[in-house]
Length: 222
Image 1: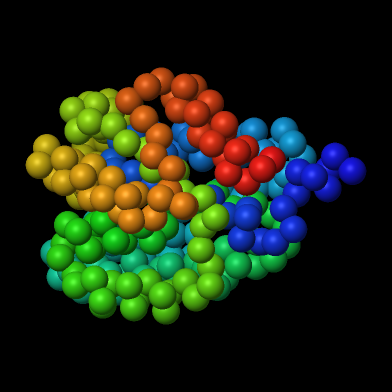
Image 2: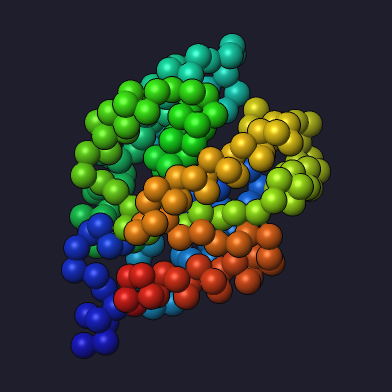
C-alpha cells in the first residue's frame, strides 16, 4: 500500500525539468533528485536538451559550437528539431513505462535564449514549441537562480577543473548576458507560477538539493 501511495497514477506527474542560466548547478540537482527518488524505489531517467537521442545529440554539437553564427530562427528550429525527436523517441515512451524523467533544460530555456535574448517573436516561438512537444509538459520545473558573479565564477572554475581551453558559446558570455539570462528566467517563472519553482542556487549544492526535494515532495505529494 505504501508503494502505491508513492507512485503517481498518470505519466505527467513524473516529469521534472531543471532550468537556469550557465553555472547555476543544474547537473548536481538532477543527480541529487535521481538519487532521492531511487531511494523510494522509483525508476528515473536523466536526460538533457538539446540531446537525449542520437539525432538530438548530433544537433546539440552543432547548436553549442556552430560553424557559423546562426540566425535566431535557425537557433529556434535547431533546438526544436532536437526536442521533437527527444519527446517522441525518449521522453513520452519513458513516461508511458511508469519511469520518472528529469530533464536538464526543456522549453523554458527556448523561451529565454531564443525568445527573450535572441528576439524571436513570441507567437512564432510558442507555435514552434507547441508543435514540438504536443501534450508533453513538465509537471514541475525547478528554476535555479543566482547572481551573475556567482554563476560566472562557477563556469570559470568548471572550465579549469575539466581542463577545457574554452567552454561553449554560452559559457563564454559577457556579464551582461548572464544578467539578462537571470532576469529573463525570473520573468518566465512569474508567468508560470503554478509549475515553476524558484530555488536560491547561490547556496551550497546540498542546501539547493534539500530545498528542491522538499518542494518536490509537497508539489507532487510524495
